[in-house]
Length: 96
Image (cartoon, rainbow, N blue to C red):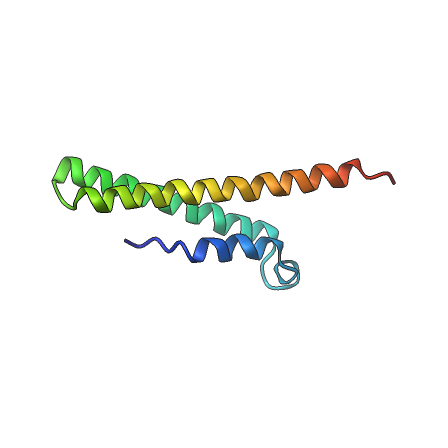
């Protein structure tokens, strides 16, 4: 498998880090990287399922692991997104 679950938290963590705005990248780059990793996990899981069903390659165990990785990466990304939306809403409620 080419999915690294350890790199997704790093990509999502770099969104909130102060160096993300002062370094070569920015918030948009970090968010794009996180989305890309979620999409890669989904594509890997889909490919594993197709290989098992159509080509008979692989085993059920690896397909289940790939599907679970994709599911967990999407769930984590959604939770991070929810935190950012909540923080944005809180900032917008602050009186000027």
